[in-house]
Image (tube, rainbow, N blue to C red; front, top):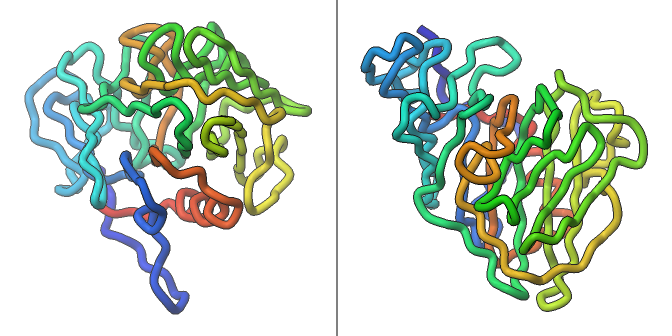
Length: 269
């Protein structure tokens, strides 16, 4: 049986940064933490949890529960729609999404009009065909890979596209994306990416900007993880971390802290 071990500490002095150090944290789904399965790969009822270190390959995930001080969980009650636990060495601790697999947030995340926000997500997309949404609430409101060189933030049926300046996203490498909206009623949206040996990010500690800044201060709602809306434009690949702030646009120093935190793969149950 394969789970994850306890938290790995840091040798550096001083308090360790956590996403809770930045205000307005509303979602924290932590790598390899608070994940449960109530049905295994053979659809037999089980009680498998990362906290018990008894997760098995292809266990069907019924919940990825909130971490830290947050309270919004990601859940799925339909067995056929449950994403899977993955035990491959590179993917251990992440959740595998594929056709007809997604999680619903236990509460909607609503970014009000003229409101700053930050979304950070670590993922590996294994197929870019037909568009792969990793967050959404509707066909007209989502965040997705349009293809292997473009990310779309679709707001109120308006496409806001952010394109790589060169190269294409790989199918075998993890990246961390950060979508940041700032400046209140101006609503400046920027997308940043970082990933070790990705080949398309320049190695900047605060992340490489993807595309150009786009202004849109419209309200955005997020209800689903791994799909645009239930079973539409499903994500294909592994998601390891999801961190969302409603009311905070992280600055460059905070971006670096978040990137470092996520990419360190801190393990805790």
